Length: 207
Image (tube, rainbow, N blue to C red; front, side):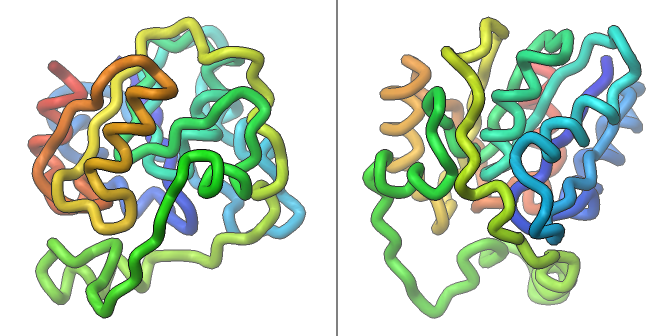
């Protein structure tokens, strides 16, 4: 099967690399997409084009979207032959919703602290490398609407990290239930289970 991995805000294919390696080890084709996240001229439509152009024409895929990638993935589902769409700690967009609106419409309540919100569950050196690999996330896509009229008619699953500090489990459970009508699955780890628990995440993707 061909797995297409969509990164979250400011992320790169590097942030998928343990999952990419594990999926390939198990015999699957994998495309980790490099989005133009640091290009202020690139909007949500360009993000979707980047995903679509990474897939050979007519090839069936599993789309896996991390965090902010949920917006890109939902739109890409309408342009690709998608067997399954999997959200990983994913933002679930409503039709026509802008990323900049999502925080308010979902009732997100940020509680800041001194802990590394993204990588607190990783070994210190690995967490430092993960931070170095982040790129600047431009505002380019933030005010573009999620150009879908309804949720894509493809099989959809969602998995959340039990120790996620950015999108706490209770919050994403509620948002997923309200918007998709089902309770998300759960895995060990924080906002980047693809780094902290890649084998468990691959087991989930293949289940």
